[in-house]
Image 1 (cartoon, rainbow, N blue to C red):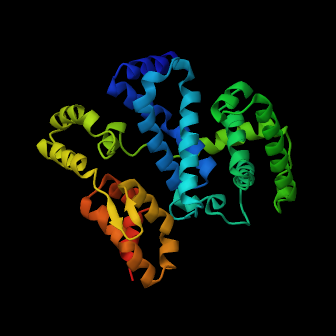
Image 2 (tube, rainbow, N blue to C red):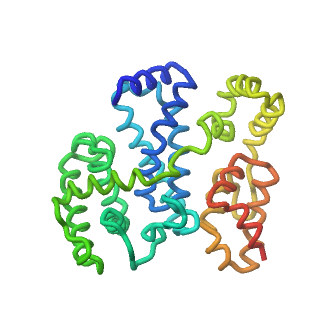
Image 3 (spheres, helix red, strand yellow):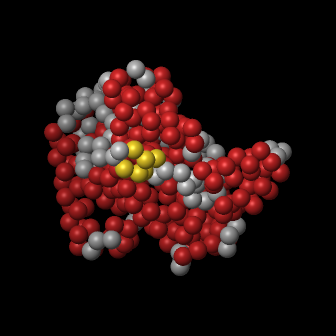
Length: 334
């Protein structure tokens, strides 16, 4: 890590919010790319990264050595990805949402299509990567994109070094087999060792993530997170005063704090706002699934949606941002 990054980390550990915001802006793209390749879903990757940096902000004081920040960050991102996998059980890729270069040059492999045409060599390799299992993808990413050592990967995954080595061999074998069996194999001859091919392909793929940057600062999205509103209330007041927003921003945030304890209860049980949020996401992952739902299914889930909307919960804000979920839900109601 650079001296500047280490200095920012140390300042953030001392409570410097501006320094942490610089860290967030600087590491977002790397964290997002890693999460995207692990989850194979743009919306889940964005969720995982946002939740990761909220956790990092809270726990950064506990990081013993600033030079270990990157490894520590990846461990948290991976944990959040796994949490989302457990809650969603499955994911559906939406080609209208997932795009890593301008739309007129949409990359087919991100849409989940089996047949891939007009790919460059590195895009073909990343298409083959996307067909591996989650564990196989993450071990290859940690080694060749994040360029961690065997020991560091073992620490991130919390497994023995011997297991890391065996997983690497297994992942590379599986990838090579998919390459050989691909209908495009004749077009892309393997002209260099697989490790070097992966390294260069991932770097090219990473560079093409033009949109992989936070749309707002860490301070902006933090104000919508229920667990952190009180801790940043004074800071937000200063930000609001400096930007001319005024008292209304703080009043809105205070309402969020008050409403955060609200839960939803029906015949099936009592649910927190977070549980309702994931229940809605599990019900339909994107507009494609929504269109397949019956009127009866909409009527069953509608009270959960209305609960978050009426409350104006921070999780309703997250729902609106998740693949335009709220907008699509209201548009497709039957």
